[in-house]
Picture 1 (cartoon, rainbow, N blue to C red):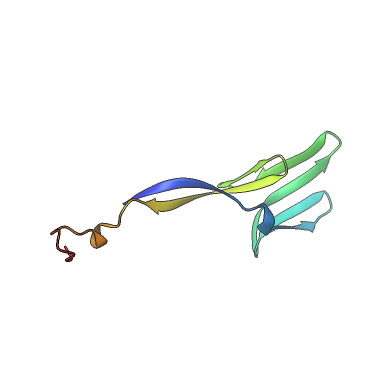
Picture 2 (picture 1 turned 135 degrees about the vertical axis):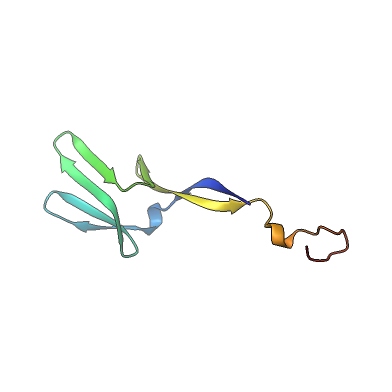
Length: 81
């Protein structure tokens, strides 16, 4: 079994809490970063594993891919290995 990198759109799960200079961003109760308001535009500072593109927020996750070896039919008779 290997781990595959996936990029999930979590925009609908992100909430913001207004601070003195911008927004602190949360997914559920976990802080994932902040948006800082400046005269030059908004600056996004997100924790490792999170990315922002346009108005969307993404989370990079690693999920198992391929078959789990303990469930593979190795004797061609639907038996366990």
